[in-house]
Image 1: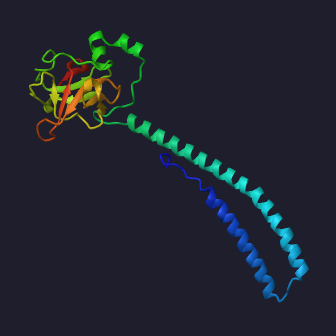
Image 2: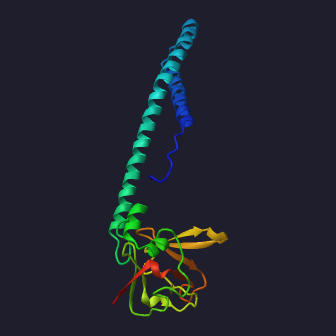
Image 3: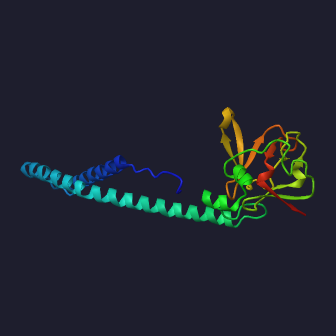
Length: 231
């Protein structure tokens, strides 16, 4: 519920108060008719003239209180639901299995500069691209798993690597769907899908739809973004 807006229908609330007032008047009048008692004309005029302002003042007094209480309740409910959603999201990140991220890695750019070698920082953080056929893993076929160099998250299994002829390591799927994230990239006047590490947000490369079966995808990844762990 925390993701949905809470609509406060003030007009509907006012309409209901007026309807309750009208219903009260009708019930009050019917009770007198049933008892056989009729109000003198002068009393009826005086009653109608005096009761209407009283009910109007009552409505003006009750309505703001009711609206305020409803708003407070709605805001409290929204905050409670948001907190629950946040805790559930954090728990799902921390309880991941296999190659799923177990908590985000968040660092400042100054911290990344100290941790990463300059050539890897250029790729992972500045979203650069290594020269084709220059990467360490472009023609690498050992059995194992390719991890994110920045945060050590498992990203791609060697069994999904294939020869694409593009000049960069290519995979037809990540090790798990949650291992990477995809974003639209409009840089250099092109429309591409950027691939980043789901744990640290490091730039990995791009994904294209010209890969082999069974997915038909080609994850074109920079070697400098990866760290190979043999099996």
